[in-house]
Image (cartoon, rainbow, N blue to C red; front, side):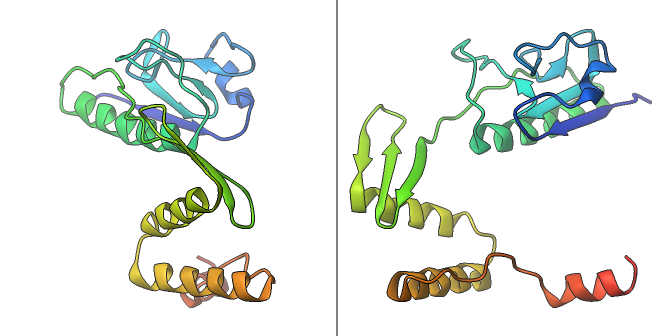
Amino acid sequence: MVKTHAIWGAGIQANPLAQSFGAELAKGRVPVNLDLSLKDHPEVFVVGDVAVITDAKTNKQLPQLGSVAQQAGHHAGENITRIVDGQPTRPFEYFDKGTMATIGRGAAVVELPGHGTMTGHAAWLAWLGVHVTLLSGGEEKSSTMVDWGWNILTKKRGKRIVISDEDVAAESAGA
């Protein structure tokens, strides 16, 4: 049986745990192999902000973005499964979906993968649409759209933290 560990870190510096593997840090982050494993520790995978990830397709260092972290986390999981199944790991190839940032109410910037850009109100509507699409269920999507609509009409912030009844019941039960 192969013993495999996964480390995920958030923030802009490597967690001190990364140094326990003897990893050499680069600007506070851990450089990883093309398959997202740690140098000299093929059983350890590092993703997220703590990792310096190089795209196997372009051989360029990838930015510290949520989309990179999500894809890398999924890929590391696939590689761990491959190791458990006795197969070789595969290098990580990032799929650039573009970058979005809101600047303020009704304003955003969108950089498309083909180097096209969109700004202003249209970019803000695109940002809203993408983020609603990424929510997991119909109730979450409709609730978010109602909250955003209320925010737009009243210029007041909606709820900032969502706690479901199940979470409260689990916490009360000591789970």
